[in-house]
Image 1 (tube, rainbow, N blue to C red):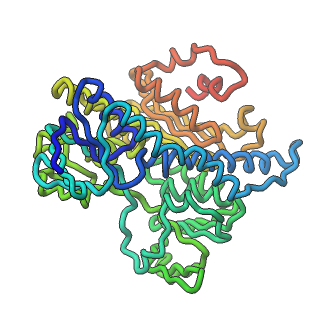
Image 2: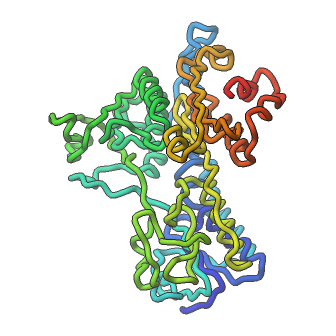
Image 3: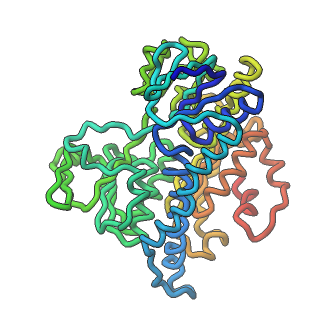
Length: 449
């Protein structure tokens, strides 16, 4: 069957769906394609289900920290019950998404999408011709040069484990490894993280990362730095990871080996060359309007697009708003990447927004850095948190916040206040005059500036 549409969307995550819905509201005929259950990574196998598991880990962590301070530790995570609770969030998503799309009059197709020519997407036996095409296909785990990669478990599979293995090895020191490692450790597993380089979590402030590594190790997570994995072998139900650590052989046995070494755009099976769509390592090559540089009918957003944007759901949603505006009104709007708050939901949490100290100096700003150990502040001392630190990057000339880097159990919420300050170019003098409810984490902001 061959069908003509105003817009064909590859992907069904939040970014893809928002563009599809807006264009449909404008009267366009819209088709959406996904080879997996509808809803996308974040609601089904990413940030949303992960945060459910993090919530349970936080409760265990809080009781452990407050042991001897009035709270008696002893509660444990029942993994199967926790996973059943998680599924109450994820299981309704695919049907709910499809019903919402059908109610709006959007046509849905299941299967692998690939270009047949510059204006046609092939899905099984169907050919969908689009005046415009949006590629919002997301990302997938990067392929690792390791013998035995078929023995790796991936993040979406980890989030579906019916039982938690006793000993888990994470390959790669990215945010997926750290988040899952803290969850698994609080649930009673022995946990190892293998990081090829000297520093994990490379997009975050090195000093705060070092503190997080120290805290992680004190909570039983074993982190192996400067260690390169060469092979994974399976013996019975167990696995052996072998590699090189500081020029010496390295060997580690475990019950599960999880891929946590980063993700890449999921575009390699789209037959982009047939669609005359140029691409690069970071995704589809786009101009400032998120339009393909080689095929003007094609746009890309989110992890599938080669932009300055971080691989985060809010960034993908922002890019989708830009694409929607440009589809409906012509190319006029460009994305703004100045404010992209990012959080590692470890325990404690690590967050960042804006410029690093190094980037601020490289860009010629007259920089003041407020680096403060806040672990003795009331906000953190009252719950016996050992590690808490902030590093605020300020432009002395304009008195504006350029960047903020936080480590604490409150870092996820606090980073949004700094994102607001950067977005609206607020002066620190103005922020200090703000009256916050007390005692709250936000009431500390003035003292950080």
